[in-house]
Image (cartoon, rainbow, N blue to C red; front, side, top):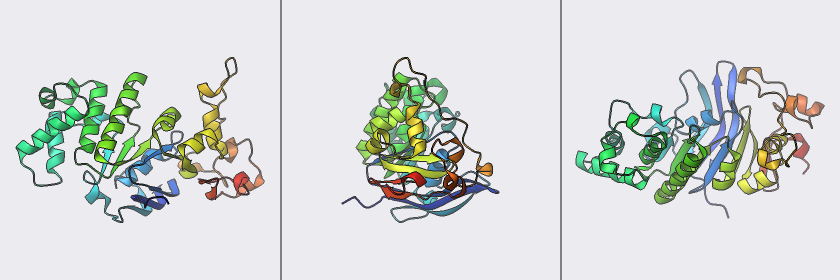
Length: 311
C-alpha cells in the first residue's frame, strides 16, 4: 500500500498570454521520497518547480491546484514546510549581507526566535553541510565562498527550518563532476536528516539513476512518462524517454556514432497538432499527428503514447 501523498498537483496549467508552457500536469510527491523531473530545456521543468512554491513568474496565469498536506496557500508554507534549493546560489544569496545573517533571517522569518539563537542555528546549519570554520564563514559574504560552498550554503538555508518538501532546481548545473557529486551527497544527507521529500529538477539522467525513487519525464509542458526511476530508465516505454536514454554516451557501444534526437522541442506558442513529440518521433502515425495522447496506466507507471495504450 503506497503512502498518502504529501504534495499533490492536479491539472496544473501555466500560460503566458496564448502560450501554454505547462499543460495539464498531475502528479504527487510522497513522504521522504525523491521525485526527479527530467526533460530537455523548455519542457516546463523549472516552471513546474516554481509553481510548487507559489513562485510562478510575473505575467503568468495558473490554473489547477497544488496542495501541500491539503493546503493551497503555498506562499504561507514557503520557507517553513516547503523550501527551494536554487540553481544559481550566487544570485539567490544577497551580496550585501553575510551568509550567516541570511540564514539567521530565515530562522526568524518563521517563528519568534532571539537573534542569538538564530545566529547559533545558522552556524550549526553551516557546520552540518560541511563548511569548515563555520563561525568565521558565517561572517563572510557570498563572494568569499567558492561555488561549491555557496551551493552548500543554500542547502543549509533550505533545510534550516526542517521543511516537509525540498525543491531543488538544477542544483549542480554550474559545478564540475566532483563538486556535483559532493553537493548531491550533502543534499541527500540533509534531506534525510530533516525527513523531507525532494523534488529534483535535472537534465542529468545519471543523477536520476543514482538518487531518485521515481522519475517524471516531461516534454512540451506535459507528462510523457512517470514511474519508478528503475523502470523508467531500464525499460522506457515512451519513445521520448527511450530517445533521451539512447543518446547517453554510456549506452552506445565503443566505435558507434552517438545517436541524437532529431529536431528540437517546440516553443510553447507553436505546438503542433496531436502529440507534441510526433514531428521528432520515429513511431509517429496519423493518429499521433492529430490526437494528443493522455497519460494511461501501464506496467506500474503512467505513459502518454498512442503506441503504448494497448500494452
